[in-house]
Image (cartoon, rainbow, N blue to C red):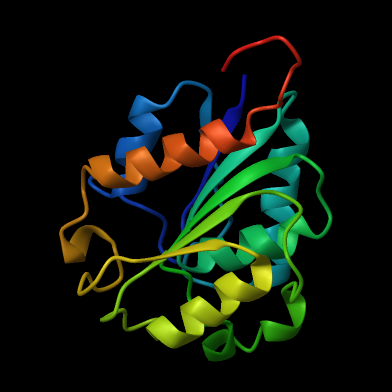
Length: 179
């Protein structure tokens, strides 16, 4: 069994956002709630992610969006609970002056970075560079903006398939047991 931790970006993810849609469909899904969704404070945000991870009694698949991707990867440096991460439309850490807080080596868990060619928060090349640093599989969705509600992402079945693929690769392997 794996838990799922939803990590929204700035301003949270409203009820029509694909993360909220995921949350309603995934058993054992929990959402990180920040004290102030309008203030992108990476140390505070990543601390909150760490606290949520620490409460889990199971390995966790993280489903992060935008600034939540940065908070997730910063938290990952201090947590052993992450079994995998789906990092969608990561924000450019340079825009927030937080690059120094992020790992520049591969993560210890499988991860997928999903980006768009028309994302106003990060260029495709920059997202691809961070994916390579983190050892993540990289997926270019094409011209889909910030991969949020405004870009037409409410229900996102293709994203859920990516989550399931990641989840399958993160399941602990038990000899003699089929997953």
